[in-house]
Image (tube, rainbow, N blue to C red; front, side, top):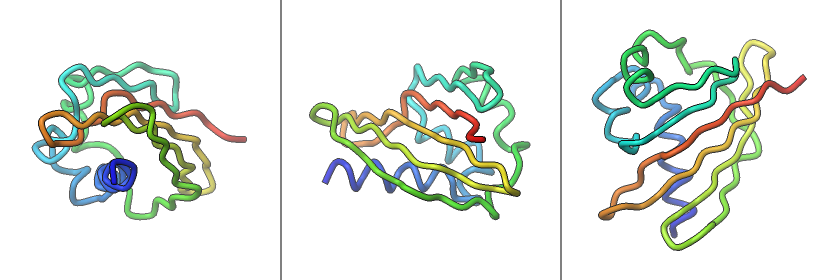
Length: 113
């Protein structure tokens, strides 16, 4: 149940309608969220929310090998590969259920060659 819910939340973040809405993304990010982006840049929650609506569309994004692993009660590690315009990226996210809601705490992306 936890794994399926975390996978669903991850896919929500990739949905173009959600991703282009600061308010929708804000609901899914933990207060202390951090991201290590594909470029190697660290993003804080506030930094990401400032630019999220200007990020490239995820409409053509393909997701492969989506898996989740229960790390502890209410904590799921999600991993997958995205492809867009020939660029493949390995991604992993840490999701935690708090007060009945799933929020992402950490995301890391690494370029695949």
